[in-house]
Length: 74
Image 1 (cartoon, rainbow, N blue to C red):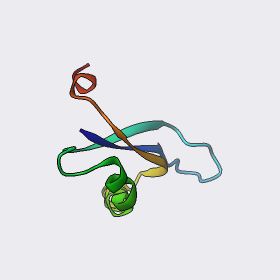
Image 2: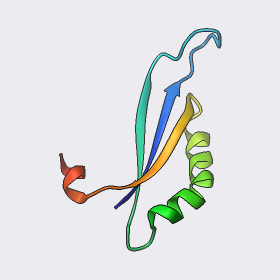
Image 3: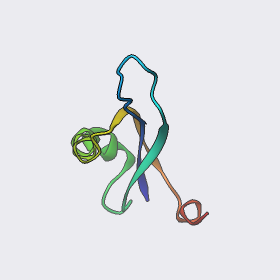
Image 4: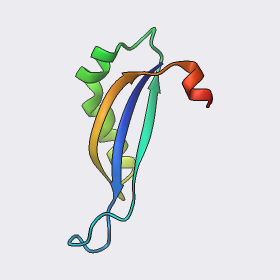
């Protein structure tokens, strides 16, 4: 599996206040179809689509990495 890991923070009602909560969100892709390099090169549209469907969250950073099935089951 290839994981696109998005680190995002919830937006507070007052922009001057620090974020209320930050957490990681995972988008998983089949490694037979997507490599880590492909993920890095083409992830911005995926992140933009995720951001549109999660308007209360602000993406802070993201990364692509290999994720083994046994790690997903824990």
